[in-house]
Length: 173
Image (cartoon, rainbow, N blue to C red):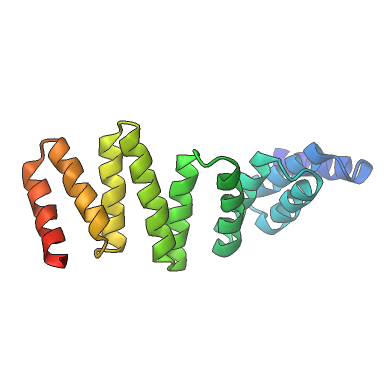
């Protein structure tokens, strides 16, 4: 229906102006919406070739790559974005999740620990606790994370949880 019409119109625009960034981007998003991820990825890569700083394209390309199972290339796209904006915490979380999928636990721990620290520094203690719990779940031997988790529980007045985590830390020492 309408998406097919839009795709044809965007293809015509690309034929008429092969270096038109917005035409390629719009074609890519329409193809992505339709589920033609391979063709969408081609269009997103064309946009990035024409305009490397087009942030929305890097995000969409990462999502499309992730959807096709190309986790390594999705990580590469997200790393470029985080390099440009290290404060993009949801993207850091996504990157951590992708590292888990890839089996790269040290990098996942680094991402989630960074999130936990950012949340704690920003006063979002409950979110920090959630991130340290995530770290503990994927790598139970992270003494520093267990200790920070215990400290945060204590600050929240959750003494029994704090005690349990301090005991876990003591077991590793």
